[in-house]
Image (tube, rainbow, N blue to C red):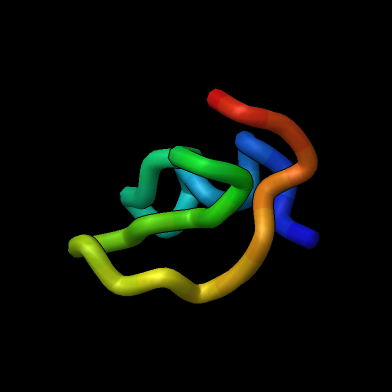
Length: 33
């Protein structure tokens, strides 16, 4: 799973336990951010 920091490093946001960089789900996040 991606951490919130890893997701943000990819210019993504954590929603619904998934990382969404540019609106593409690439992996689960560790928590709802």
